Amino acid sequence: MAGDAEGFDRSVPLPPQLRISHVRRAIEYIERETSEFVDVYFEQANVFSAVVGIFGVRALDSLSPYKRHKHPDIAQQRFPDLSLSGRLNPPPEQALESKGTTRPWELQSHYNHAGWYIVWRYTIDRTRQMKGREVVVWRVDARFLGQEDWKYERSAAAEGRGGRTHTFGVRKAAKVFRGAAVYQLPGVALKGKKPVLINGA
Image (cartoon, rainbow, N blue to C red; front, side, top):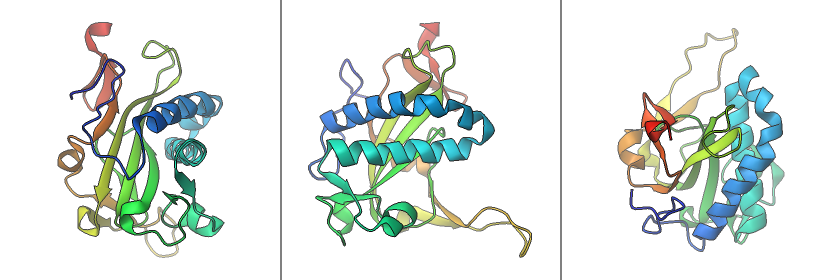
């Protein structure tokens, strides 16, 4: 990754009018504001990932030209989370979805819509050695995804017996997101699919 001293790579394409400064401030906001919900992570990690995505929406809505969808049902349950200047029916190039995950490459969604996706890849560091905080956004990926990038992941739950809702996953996620890291925390690398401090630094 050809990042600067802070870990930002300005060669990575971003959604129209989204800037490195917006991403930087959003990372700071997410790490600060989600810290009080860390206990949720240990109870139900997928819920905490949703919280990270939600705070990503809040940050970009406040700090960037991308605004939360004016219809709450669409903003909360459908697609997209945000659109450039709050456009109601944005073209895919102006639609932005915010996702939080602990996975190094994989990404899941309830929809397979084409649009921009910003992925806050985080870890919980109770030692506070990585960045002085418990919630650490160690990488941020930005990638435009088309419908062809998604694959349907059928639920194995039997009818009437509960289970997760149907989802879509990104095909060949490691290949798709390679080169999409607009930010990676300096001094951190993947080891066994988990971010770790290089040489224990």
